[in-house]
Length: 282
Length: 299
Image (tube, rainbow over all chains, first blue to last red; front, top):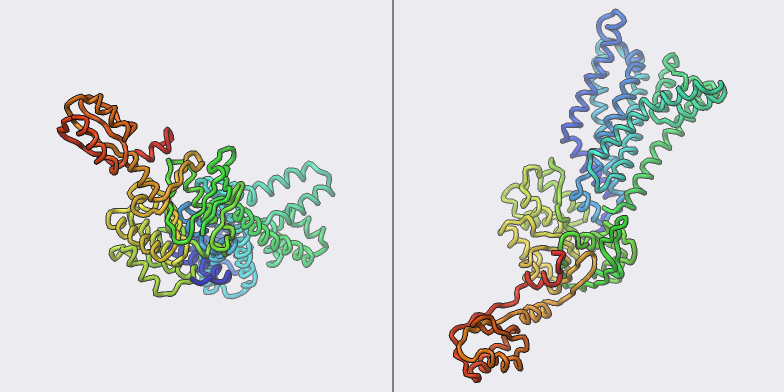
């Protein structure tokens, strides 16, 4: 009987979760759906503007940001909750092992993260190959920025899924899924609407401060603003992002603010989830 | 090896276990009995580090360390009541994962798969397993690390006769090797066959703690002899009461409660009283009746 190191235990849990995710029809469906949608974005933009064929990377990237903002949080939250809110019998066996709950959680989240970004990479890769073959490599950096944005957003949303799952022990998984849907709706739709609605009732200065706060605090808004900033798509900026740019005094400072927000969003949910899990009765 | 010291667990206002103090020593097998909702699983989960006590403590090993500490759980193997595994993993995948997590040698995989006797299904997805096969796989995971403490929550509930035989021989071998076994069960056959001691919980409270010897004595005391006889039976019963105080008459039968050792003397006394003995039957004390006596209306 030998104790395994925490790092080894994390790696084992990650590997196990990766295997499970690869065998899951949900992950496979997500990879295919993502590739189809990314290609559809590349084609439809050109068709809608009267052309035929495929848009180049830079145009596709700006359109893909919206797809990423909608689809990535939804899939990461739902698949995260489905995976991390284990059956009771499985959780009891797993958490009775001589490994800390935080290590098991971290391993599982990392494995799932790897599976989801692999599925996204397949989707983006398939679309990227078609765009490259039809329109060349012009603007490929922006396309890579969107991929990076998707990866960051996946990490943030898996952290939130871990918090939801840790609070759902002993309850039905459907409850956790419902909470995940509500979180998605708030992050992607309601937060922006609420900020804009409240800002319209305030005076200019206060409204700007509110919009800036909303752009930084909401991780989905932060990823969108950062991605558009990096691919030079300020034309697509909303009022909150423009207010942030004005307030921070330039793209570099705005970028740093957004990066700081996203680092916190990557760390804090996982910290909260492991704290919640360590106190939970399983 | 396992020590519950004033262990109390409360879920909201519901007290699942109240002030349980119980020690299970090295090499001992203790059965935890009680009706549904009596706190058996909660106690076992606390020993597996899955539940934090509201008050008191649960210690593992020598010297005792809190069961909540991952290092203390190195000494423990726990089999949950309704163990489940991810559907898409094969039986072998499951064993391999837990073997690596426990740092057991690679040779253990095939050894424990033999224990599970999955009839060649080790390479099949767990989602295709029956309840009994899943339970056997859970047992295989539990025996993987050769841990000194075995915690088993209703381990025989879903087992067929072959699985039951494999389970009994596994637990008996572990006990013979000096491991500590704490298990819950509703199967009184498990208790008679495996346990050195048994504890009965009712509504979260320990109401009885007996050794196998004390159990046998208690059951013996609950045996009785029925003697069909003719003659002056009331006089005979009166004389019999000096040997067996609870003797009484039921129609033409004299009922003599008490252990088998009492019976020859009782028969001798009846003959001395001039009674003609026409037949007799003996009933031994039964564990199920004794159990009902202990748990009362909760059963």
